[in-house]
Image 1 (cartoon, rainbow over the protein chains, first blue to last red):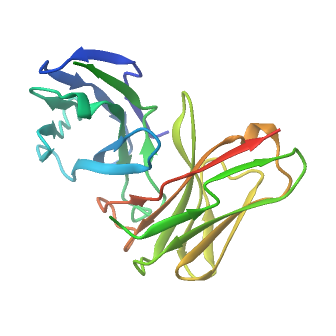
Image 2 (image 1 turned 45 degrees about the vertical axis):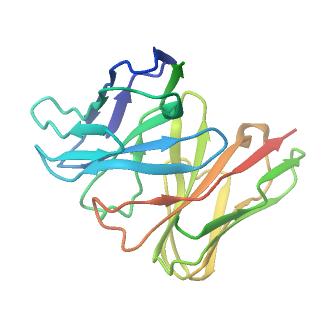
Image 3 (image 1 turned 180 degrees about the vertical axis):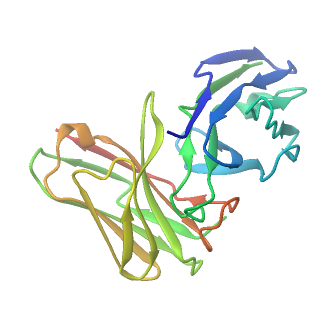
Length: 115
Length: 114
């Protein structure tokens, strides 16, 4: 079936370090890809997305590029801040159901940034 | 922020009792979803709705039912709660259910079944 795989962590970094959170997917068809972020005690909010191959999503200094050849959508940031500490979810949605089937999520990566 | 509220925000109940969680939106979006979040599983879809009185099952629908009598409200019912249904429940909405469309999430309901 369709699935998303990402490192679970926790991933602990120092402030201003470079970040990469790997995300790979398995899907029948051509999905749209998303990164959602969940801050402590809150719901999920969209961080960025890409809807076709080679698209780059970006927001708040985070970037991810949709790589069809490697079925990946890795999240990157050049210099992390303490406020980036959160859980990050990679997700996909597929055509066919018109996206109405909901999102398929990875298990989430807990990111901890130390001052 | 999308106008999505969930109630209650926290609930403790006992095994075998019925529980209803409510999701309310003010965005007039057509699609609404219920997910559960568990450690090591991420979020998994329980049920979704594509209009008033139109609902369908998701990946983990056993033990749950839903109803949508108005565009703005989507109810999730646990007919007879079990300890395995202890979880955090999130409601989400999207405008048209299209691929690539953003889903907006509510703040969540934390449910503990004793």
